[in-house]
Image (cartoon, rainbow over all chains, first blue to last red; front, side, top):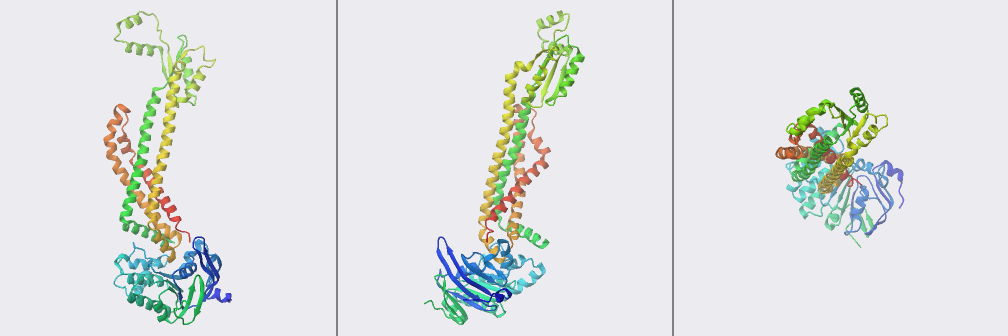
Amino acid sequence: MEFSCLVCYDSLVIVFQGVSKHYSDRGVALEDVSIQIDPGEFVSLAGRSGAGKSTVIKLLIGEERPSKGRIFFGQYEVNKLQDGELPAFRRHIGVVFQDFRLLPAKTAYENVAFALEVAGRPQREIMELVPQVLDMVGLGDKMKNFPSELSGGERQRVAIARAMIHRPEVVIADEPTGNLDPFHTFEIIKLLEKINQLGTTVVLATHDREVINNLERRVITLDKGRVIRDEKKGKYILV
Amino acid sequence: MFTIISRIFHFGAKNFWRNGWLSTATIAIMTLALIVFLGLIISGVVMGSAVNLIKDEIDISVYFNTNTSEDQILSIQQSLEGLSQVASVDYVSQAQALATFQQNHASDQQISQAINALDSNPLEASLNIKAKNPSEYGAINDYLSSANLAPYIDKISYTENQVVINRLATIVRDMEVGGWALTIFLALIAGLVVFNTIRLAIYSNRDEIGVMRVVGASNSLVRGPYIVEGVFWGAIAAVISLVLVAPVLWLVSPYLGGDFIPGLNIFQYFYTHIVQLFLYQLLFGVLIGMFSSFWAVQRYLKN
């Protein structure tokens, strides 16, 4: 697949060009993956456990480096970023994980505020924005609670609030509903759709058939590290 | 920049308070390490006093022929005082030597009568010489044995006590070198214990460091609060260690300064040097807390 890289550099397109990732102990995680995600898209990465979904996300946020190929995020060539450049790059992205990854010693408010504090945003702006976003995810009354005092669904909503508080260009969600019951799963997916409607690109990695089928959005299906299907309005089909 | 620095302090202080048990455990270990460090300083003082006591016992005396004039002796004293190895030179005249001798033997009738029967003073004038370092008595003896001084001098006590002086000099040197080696060794062990404690404390926070990185925190913002926590741990441990050691020294001081090393008052030393000791403790505690935190976090800042 060929890409027009002038477009890649100028707009916030995500591009994987022939990306492979090999681990010495676990073998091949990704093999020659080439995908393009345009600004404002809602893309689901589907596949069984071990298909390579999380590897795509780790490579995209610069947590790991590809063995081969190039990864672009707007003007950034992610695979070439130095350790010192990663923090600034990551402030363009909001990430939501299956295990929430909240800071246990910080309250819901502080967890969300942290994403703005690391970016050096003024305190007044933080005090204004954080309650608004927590209200938006329905946790306006639980701002002072620590993660250990919140339910799974509430923790994930805090994680989403943290991911979107700094208005990132892209929100990446890695199995965000993996630890949640169907009710909370529905809530979280609704929130992600709302974020997408506000113009943010959403990349959702999941192996939840119901979630993907209900979304009726673009689905990239991975199997054994390869892209086996890429459909505009896809379904969860593994064969 | 100011915002980031103030946030680093704010996060550090908050983490310190909220990770109460972790902070308590780390401070406890650091306190033990600082007590060892303070113990090393105090032992250094005790050993220094013991060494000085031994040093004070060592000197050499040079006895002059009875026909050597006082002026000649005083001129030799002056030349000795000009030597870099010499700490002090005391002149004992013939008359003083006789007076001391008589005083020492006042109870011995036979000796007193024999002395009184003499027409002239048979005792020789002498110079008692103390070296700055016990190992330098050899050099002083060489100077006194030179040919131009030979006509004035009857004998030098160094030649008689050479073996004892050298042995004492070796003991003093070994105590000083051994003391330093032991201090460095134990301080290193104390430092390693603290380093590993802090490493474990930060290891338990490794997931949080990962979260901070994912959210886009710069290395300094991730590392900073842990360094601030390290400073708090060190400073509090410094205060606690001093508070714990003070009553122990108060109890031990009379025994240590009695028969063992006469004149030594270790509690007095502690009391008069408390600010200096606190600064040492603070410096050791804070530096080791800072560096341990810095290095412990460093390994989690890759990617």
